[in-house]
Length: 172
Image (cartoon, rainbow, N blue to C red; front, side):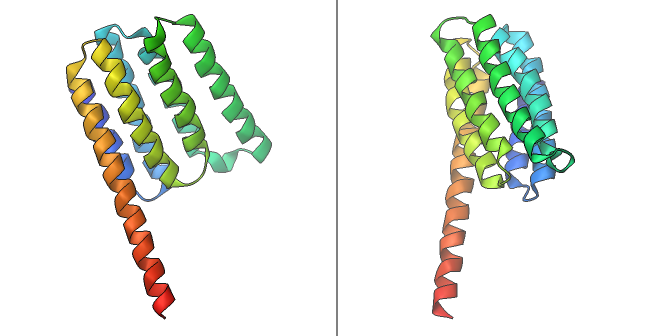
């Protein structure tokens, strides 16, 4: 249970951090904690995806060290690895949920805007809550529901702030 608590704390903290690199470093910690939790509940697809997501998130946080071509190649590589993981660890249609969350997450983390990280957490919260309900990981169901709601709140808050700033600009 400690790994799941650490997962949610890291995800929520990553959503609050404005700087992309720092946010992704904190988010990568959540991937490792989630992978360790998956080992304890026997969720094989989730375990491997957690490891893949950690490596992916960490590499995407170091965007500056890659050329554009190499960075795009990383994107394609991780999309392929997630799809391959889905085939190897297939455990029925339930395996689609973490796979789709990871595929969407790869794109959202690859794009340099933190808004997409928040959107990724929204999707991850929704899909993973259902995935862990299947594996009777009820604490994670609760936690990912909180992540979903927190991500939704952060996205709405940011949009309201942006709209407010646009209104102020128009009045000047």
